Length: 129
Image (tube, rainbow, N blue to C red; front, side):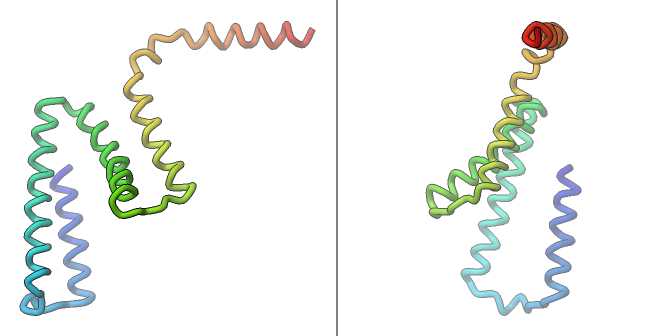
């Protein structure tokens, strides 16, 4: 997966450079520092991802990856004063619900759904009389 993600990023950056080429000498020192910090933090994030998979397993790491978006949203609201639209709040709720559903998957799998459905149908028939 990482190979595909890195290849996609390199392709997008290459296409962007071809559309609007900029000489490397035109970058300011602040631009070079930004590129350096992005490289360092990208490498650290990949390293911690692989350590997480090794320590937690792939399922737990994938769940934490979903929560990365929620944490980013929270930090943007707190530090940058971002305002979310109703649709964005809904998307955040969907992400949190998906994590909770996977988290409690074992309990849901052992639950007797047929029993609940049959009881509900019996209740509906009795309430009509």
